[in-house]
Length: 502
Image (cartoon, rainbow, N blue to C red; front, side, top):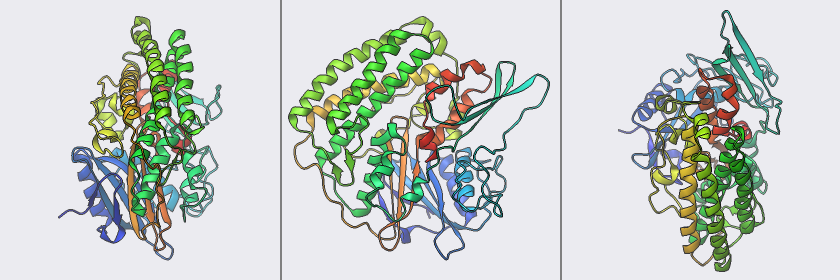
């Protein structure tokens, strides 16, 4: 007998159909699913008014089966930590402790994740106010000639705030600990009792460079709960916008890597090309970042045949220029010498940490929601776009493969975009139900879960941005590297601070 419910990407499940497990059974089932090749998409908790017990939910993506496994449990104020056996859950357990004042005995490094100052209780501080922002215990290495380097939260560049604590032996980094949370806005709490008029703006600003990815995921959660069928032309426009978002960011990232190694031809080209892809998104909807395009039920801007042909012609020109700039970069020996065998993350470590997207595929892990949990316009099976080195070169090369693949997909989408309606009005959301959606954003898997109350309003809304998983990968990539390699390693991941902080 299964102690979990199987569903598909974009599926809806009545809350009453979820088996209620005790914490021990929940932990053993979750551990078994992960050991069998599942990936933890998200893990979160909720507490209903008048109910002293904590409600636990976990979503496991089973790529081999092409489905999702949903686990549910009720727990008290202490939950035995699963982190020693399944490191993928380490941040989720800390987050639950931070948000609900519960403890996870056995967690190897239990402390807050984001410093949410509006919350009255934090695990380990249940009788106190939350610690001030930046007041964090850090792992320390002791010994002769060991020194500590602190960077941030205010950085030398125009960048979001985050603190990086290096434990070094000379120039060698023994350990890097990353502390974020400085931009925590409490978006998940703002979404409660929604959807409301402010919901789209809140979703689109979770991580501004992933506007399309997050808004598509949220829209599909609402559509699932409302049993709303999205017109085929709208799903095509969403896919076009999602691939343009991927192209703009991948091209920009390779350009940034080129700048960091001092290879200015590609750096200059890619800066301009990124703007060209953003301008194509602006042609679609008036916003370079895609705001105001995707909405529950479809899209707010149609794509007439004349505009599709214009974009296709523009894509042909920009695509050729992009290939030239990237070939120049990857064909230069001095560039490759700086990228290869630097910032290595092993496949085993990537699997244990639950890395996603480019960071995972660079380690030889085939995980892509467009391949294994296809939805919308992604009907054709995508190729396996992986590298095995796990280094900066591998992360750059995966982006290169994805640029080529996105150019081909966009040409097909623009050539075949169907005519017809671009929107359908969602009806009332189903009460006491759960819906989950995975979208392959440009950084990796974006996971959204919406749970409704008896009135069909959001009682809990959970978001897992790919950066929530991948910051741990950056910390691992610096192990035994030179501290001078940090900027290049950081660029090769290019993670979101606000997407992590929410």
